[in-house]
Length: 273
Ligand code: GTP
Image (cartoon, rainbow, N blue to C red; front, side, top):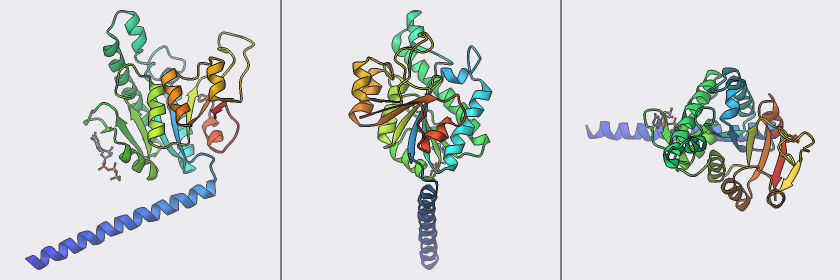
């Protein structure tokens, strides 16, 4: 009996070693492939707007837009870029508008966080339909639906080539999903935060309102503050600035833009030191 147990335990150790070996093999393969693709960014955090997901609709999720996003994300995953995503919830629920209507701010913010989980689940599903491996982690525990946010686990998923979607913002009221994106990007040590919007960069004024507004190719963090440009809310922006995390604002609705950015092309507006 004791001998059998010893044999079983030896076998277990062997199979664990094999898993470890295969993992390491996969890792070096990933690195080799990355070198082959020679991408400018190895690990990115993509911030998607919930409102952009509406497409032409007035509310909810436009399936065509969702599929376009999923194809664009798949394309950079195939180039061995590690992808983490934070998505807003404005297409389903806007906390601030609810507050204007008389709702309690904290309650409204939590409802907004739940909206981001719905969008995250939709994106996860769209990616999986294209054969992309994903993991969804939520800042608010919802064990029946997704994993809780655990930084080390998120990094491990990324290293294994899985797309990690972070739902429920930071899990705290009074913070935006831009802040969640900056925070998660810093936590997972992303090379860059890619803020996908429906405009193609940062302008001198809102291009949807001011006709002759001009676009910047590049700005420093200080210039953004001096010119009072609305790139992100102050908390999110300050996090990026203090941690030297570069931001690229670009048009996510144009297919292929995401790939061009990770390949190093000048797309949108770059903000760095
Ligand atoms: P590795 O062990 O690093 O390969 O990661 P893994 O994600 O494959 O392993 P794990 O056993 O943690 O997860 C297996 C599956 O269960 C994945 O689809 C996870 O997203 C899912 N999962 C893990 N934890 C939770 C949880 O708390 N809730 C839910 N709903 N799913 C979970």
